[in-house]
Length: 120
Image (cartoon, rainbow, N blue to C red; front, side, top):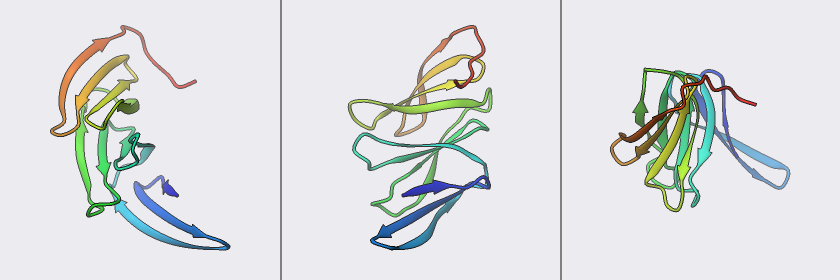
């Protein structure tokens, strides 16, 4: 079980029977607004409300790598485009939909909806 704290800390809880073990996986120093696993569960996206997306690969070194940093508008949500783990789609509060190539963080496409978006 992965869990994020308001302070930007990613925790991992290993639960077995009636016992659990907690481990701190990363501290990104920004509040994490959502966590999204890739379809094959190899990459975990950490999305902040400040417009930054980080990738965490649990099976590899456990490092957190900054992928995207929009700074133009705060992310509302992001998710993987399937099939695969190569692309991500995001939407900002200002209504901008973006498609990203996750390998190098390049924005491939943008579409402005011309409306403010909120969670519901």
